[in-house]
Image (tube, rainbow, N blue to C red; front, side):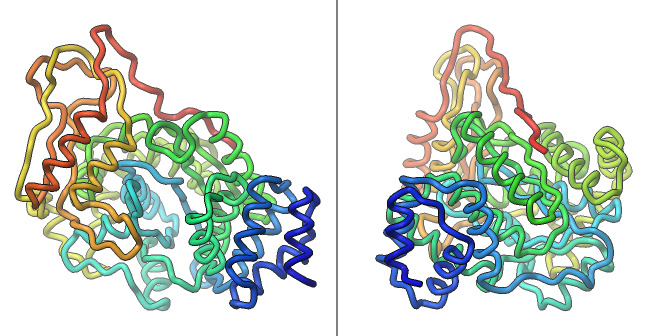
Length: 434
């Protein structure tokens, strides 16, 4: 088999066989196929597309390109959640302890943030001394004993995806539904969960800007997951404004903790409960969605979820006093309020611009090697549909450098729109795809 022939075949719009796809992934991962040939194939796929059979074959070849987690020593069915990336998305921090409190094992590998989208690992590292690296036996032990462990992704998990994404990023081939679906699902399948729930973001702060594209991506990923024996559900959720009121690592941990204590963001709690309910039903711990939702909300009311989160933080070396008293969390020393120049209603957010403002404050990465400031970010006081008086606060920015604060403030001024007429807030849950 020759890479030249595979490129030519896809260039001409023909279907690649499973063995051809396996050949490409194996030999590219091993360094036997050069970047220039892989780039040519990616462009051919981008232009010609892949059918479902090809996409499933690509997903499995990428999942099998490195280590696959063996979670068989963890008792019970395992559930995992993946978000396609948004601004202010801290649902993992809320739903994981809720599920663990109900006896569902959550053995999760999460990523770091890149660009304007945040990463769960970065958020957790804003808790002093918290460790996101655990030996495999400790990871398994923690899940068996307290039902929850969360670590960073290993480089040996779906390494083909990492190499291919690096090429896609510099060859204008990111925006292809088959390549996106294979990238996400290969990592989820390699991570070993029995049940996968996908949070597919839709809107101005999401990769998928409209409902039609989000539905196509979600449907394909659900079909891939179910096709390889993993119960998979997708929830399409709104990203036309940040989720909750906090954007930035330490700020988002504070909001997640306050939500677990029953006094945080209703939006964050709602989406976390919707996602967790499908996970609970999927692993057989609830008969239906309504019962699942009720059980999950009880873990907030009876304090089991926050106690589980405190136990989880302690197990991974974190200072639990920062969870018991979130005012101890380090926030940027410089603050600035963004105030309304006129009265009216918040009509819209360019959510990606809010994310970029947080990035400019130092709270995000422009490259994977960038150092980030965990203490900076943005707290929103008003959301879409809220009434605002002239001079009233819309947001507060936290920074440690005056120059960064100035740049982020200018960006935030452009990030929202006002209306004189009352505005309906966007619907948080758009659609469920099973």
